[in-house]
Amino acid sequence: MNLAEAFRSALSGLRGSILRSALTALGIIIGVAAVITLISVGQGAGQEITAEIDRLGANAILIGPRGGTQLSARDAEEIVRRVPTVLQASARFDAGSTKAKWGIHTHDVSVLGVGAEYRHITGLQLSQGRFFESLDVERRTRVLVIGDGLVEDLFRGRAPIGEVVNINGQGFTVIGVLEPQDAGFGGSGNDVAILPLSTAQRLYTTDRISSIYAQAESPQVSDLAVTHIRTIMDLKYGRERSVNVTSQEQLLDVVRTITATLTLMLGAIAGISLLVGGIGIMNIMLVSVKERTREIGIRKAVGARKRDILAQFLVESTLLSIGGGMVGIFLGWFLARVVTLFGLTTAVTINAVLLAFGFSLAVGLFFGVYPAAQAAKLDPIEALRYQ
Amino acid sequence: MATPVLHLDGIHKTYHMGDVEVHALRGVDLEIFRGEMVGIMGPSGSGKSTMMHIIGCLDRPSEGRYTLEGEDVSIKDDDALAVLRNRHLGFVFQEFNLLPSMTALENVCLPLTYRGLPTAERTVLARDALEQVGLADRTGHRPNQLSGGQKQRVAIARSLATRPAILLADEPTGNLDTQAQRDIMEILGGLNDAGITVIVVTHDPAVATHCRRVIRLLDGQILSDGPSAETAGEVP
Ligand SMILES: Nc1ncnc2c1ncn2[C@@H]1O[C@H](COP(=O)(O)OP(=O)(O)OP(=O)(O)O)[C@@H](O)[C@H]1O
Ligand SMILES: [Mg+2]
Image (cartoon, rainbow over the protein chains, first blue to last red):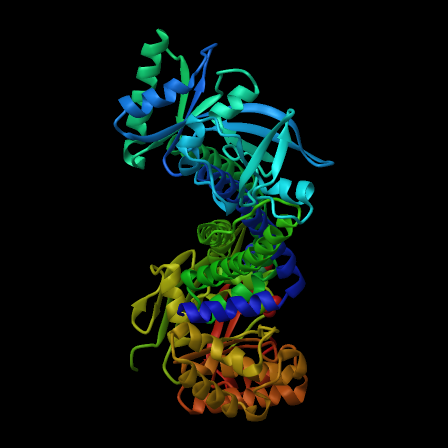
């Protein structure tokens, strides 16, 4: 008897008890759907964070103070000068939040002072106007680039370019508007007012900076650049670990690791339910073998060999699990879509689908072997005499 | 005479039920030749079914030697016995033993499936067999849509489909009324005329008259073995 025959007799066996087959498959359906959905949540989270990090800008390197170090704008210049693998760098001063005013309208903003290079390092896009130049930074020009969130609130439909916005009692001319963006690590959201570094420092009467954004030549040299920057800073501040230096690559690595672990954990939890489904299959197959003892006896009496009976029941359990697996994949995909309605990003990857399918196939085979072997080794006479 | 188609030599069958040993067969010697029609009689529990199961390769003797078509069967493994059942033997049971979910045609096809024949060829052979038992018009019926006699005829067709050399029937008429009994025995007689060796277990002396040779069993041993005319008069 070939596989097609085993397939046929298995199908008729399943059809003999539709409801029971469906309930058994339900265990697998739920297991596979859980695997697909939970893995999609893990993968989706990873993709979202990766996109955030990408928004930092290509090959970006973040330098932050550590243990009381007071970074200065000169550090940024020094890094560009002394680290050959660094293309450009910009200091960044996070001044905190305050109110921006235009006429009678106000809007809460975070004030940021940065160098002209900052725009290129972080890949900021403008929807109107221009970003400020190095000259503006040198001359402490009183200009301002605003986030998209201010446009509607402050200007109420009027063109913002050229308007003077009041911050902390001083006026600044709007020269550019940023494209709308999602809030992230590097980005500062839409409620932001970006001033030339020197202008912002004077406004707050300080020469403090918060961090330095640098850009490495390529992803390949970014590790090298990180080490180099660290060495230079440690030398300058006369102690080890004076700064935190993190490259975009390293952040991506961390996220990849976290995502992989998260996905694995979620997948494993879901896998347990798949396993439970498999035990359900085994249970039902054992019952089925018992119930169909007489049928097995008849088949053997007319010439079925062990392997024929084995194949029949194995194909049956595998059909159950694969059928359940396929329905489960669709259900999982559907649930992943539903989850996005609650604001989570999900991603159903082809790998997850293949994994779930392969796993359900394996579950059917694994949990089908024992019942099928029980059926195959029945003695024909005893089987025929059964009840 | 020619070599026997089957030969039982000192066959014993002992069942162990806990500490109790049941001797179902106690030294049976028997030769059956090609083309014979043999009746097997004997009181209930005398070992008729046990002997039929051994002849039909459904069971193994505890002791003794069974030769089928010149081959020693006693030493073969389960799968080899399955192949023998499929190739050389047809078995008809008292309880029909049809698969309830299958049509008459599918039931008859079953042994052909295990022989590995392609579907088209199977269907031809199965239809043939059903025609031989007069059920050409019932191929699509399921067992629960057939009368007892018809079910038994489907079972005979199933055992015929593989064109076996030997047909074994264990009380094939036990569950049937007189008319159906007569039909079944006529069919078996016809098959025997066509050259198939037929062995029938029966309680009914009337049925036994169809057989040219009748073997009587008692307590697992052969009591008598001879032409039916000679034994017909005796009390069973
Ligand atoms: N599986 C078994 N386990 C134990 N004892 C058995 C088994 N099968 C048969 N026997 C015993 O073997 C003896 C012969 O049984 P068998 O079925 O061959 O009788 P039979 O001649 O066919 O009887 P009947 O005419 O009632 O069918 C009986 O005593 C029976 O109880
Ligand atoms: Mg019997």
